[in-house]
Length: 263
Image (cartoon, rainbow, N blue to C red; front, side, top):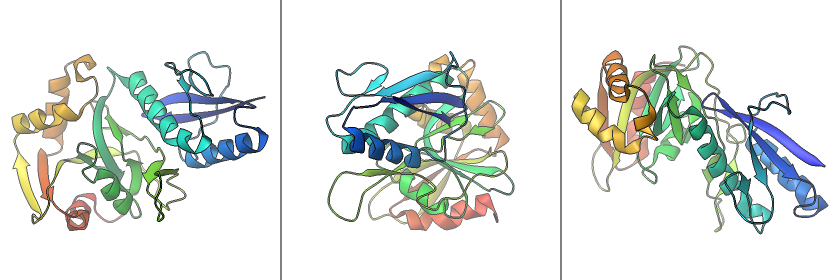
């Protein structure tokens, strides 16, 4: 028996497949239930025979470009999330501006705040905090088309449990995060700069400064036609970018809510 599921991110659809008997009957069923739950927000109905689908396969054995492997089921989930992320990014290269960023959206208006930052600088924590009130778009990769529309990637979030151990992948539904609602559209773009022991500071960036700071947090920018013009157009259309320097994410909430408005 083959178990299959199709998820959507950045407007691309990716198939997940697991062969029966990988880890044992009971473990297979438990793992598949965990996968379905973690990816519940991104799951879509599908035609399993669609030749355009790219399949990410889960099994024991040698790794390859379309196979996620693990010796133990509990270590497979984060690897699966990484592989799906690579797959949806690959599918939209050259079509969207792909930012290493988190994002939330006002479910009533669609106005969206995107915060660009390297890994480990607090964007997932900020996303999760804001998304209890505003619609969760992603905590990993934001895809924006030249007109400013954002294509959500409602992936599971990596969360460290209360007891020592590896992070677990939890669905936005399990964490109680809000849904985007109206069509998400870029309203404001922020570059996060986390530093220990500093007070919250806001710095307005001109277009050149913003582009220089953003290009390091993009995927395959050279493949996007007229990429710099696209970025400049998005910045001009939203009033430019800001750099938020901070120590604790709680100091950012008021500024974020002032841009997003009442949901």
